[in-house]
Length: 257
Picture 1 (cartoon, rainbow, N blue to C red):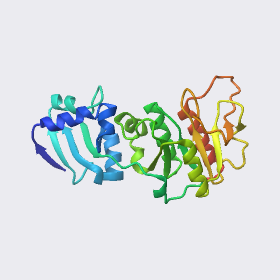
Picture 2: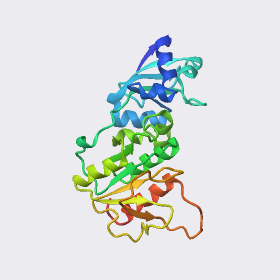
Picture 3: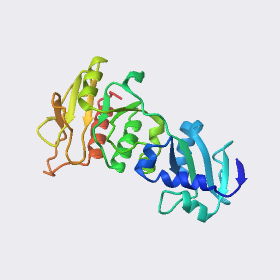
């Protein structure tokens, strides 16, 4: 543990403030990770990405051996924190680059693609679930919630730093491209009307499973097999993150993952 005593600079405060907004995050190479649990996970997974580490004066940081911390006051912590009740530790992190399909190397039994998932909580939960079932890659449309926003990091418990995250602009082109590299069967999640995810034998057989927008579903691509989760209780729909979790753990149940 290395501690430095100094005041925050105006440049540091301005940077953290800019990262609170979508425009600032989009145009920055940095993101923010807060809280002991999430910062510890990031430190374990990708400590090389940590550019600055701040902690509340007197806070114990022995879990982060070799990492230089700057001690700051509660008032200063409030200046850079993005949460209502900050826990005393904040990292400024170099944001991992979103990958393109031509950089895809590590194969999964199937691909998980997210189309316009806008809610940070849903995005983070899906990322965390993908990691928990041992997927190495996740594919997201460019109009999804930002995977390295502070809210998504908290929701994912920093699991995005353990995954390869690929971005695509157009679902139709993405489907054509993945078909050419061997993931030819396309499954589109639907509220109703599709084959049951529990009965479709080839659901995880070199396929691409697309999870659509929370309100309007999958955008424009129609040339796939619709799959749905049986809901005997007659509810209107499931939360997108819940649906993704059920599908992913069905792959675990079958021994695919």
